[in-house]
Amino acid sequence: MQGAFELGLVAILFLGLQAWWLSKVFLNRPRQPRLRGKPMRANSLQKERNVFEKIIGKS
Image 1 (cartoon, rainbow, N blue to C red):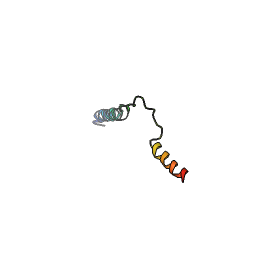
Image 2: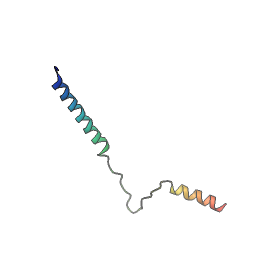
Image 3: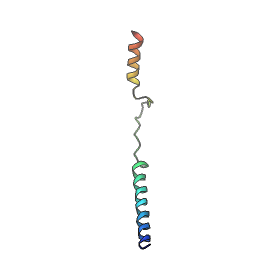
Image 4: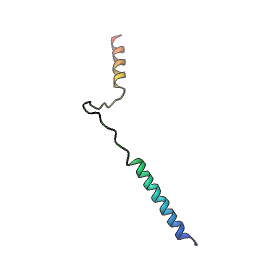
């Protein structure tokens, strides 16, 4: 059991570093800025869908 304390210390340090890195990557992402004065669209392909529906509906 020689070096068990050192191995445990390195393991705790490694896991702490992993938790710190994951929190930096996943929890501190900057928010997307909202455009002022324009409503947010739920569907980003809404314009293409409307054009497609006009083509299908009028023919």
